[in-house]
Amino acid sequence: MADRVISVHLGTPSVRLAEQRDVPRIAATLTLVQATSRWARWALPDDGRVQRLTRLHELDAAHRAVSTGTGWVTEDVSAVATWEAPDGAPGTRPLPDDVREALARELPHITGSHWSRVRETHALVDAARPAGPHWWLAHLGTRPSSRRRGYGTALLAPGLASCDTTGLPAATVVSTWAAVRFLRRLGFEVDREVPSADGALQQWLLVRPPQG
Image (cartoon, rainbow, N blue to C red; front, top):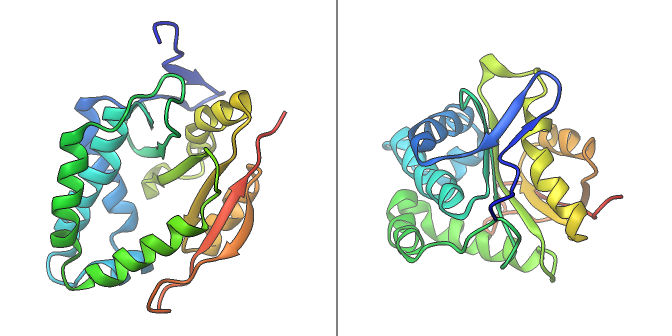
């Protein structure tokens, strides 16, 4: 859409749509945020974990979001939010075949010996997601040095505004209670627990109905 807003200014932090030039920085930011997380230890083998996580974020966060127009970053890309939009959402594009194929080809290798439980858990999450069209918050992260500046709220504002404008819910799954607390402040509520397929990782599915 030619008249699509490409930058949102909310007080101090400003955010913009992610661009191709941001791909390495998006991957680096999200990897820094998640490298020692419980989820990363559960999903990825010890061997080469940081490299695996970086490649995962290049594909599943950066290339996916840039190609579909569903990623938002701060000016210095120290904070990132990426979404999966419902089919035909205004201002977004379908996932290109080359990105889809790269994800299908590389994810089993990235997760290595953990692939089976990652795949089975992904299926459980998919089954728990809202049945109708919705925006799915796939990735959200802020570098430690840039936290407590309102970046997370500013980054989510464009996606949530699209939800409210079109009357669609937003949903996500998280594996920390700190993430639950943060998202509750933005209108999300816990819908259910969705433990990992092997029972080793606690997760919560959150849903935010359209507002306004």
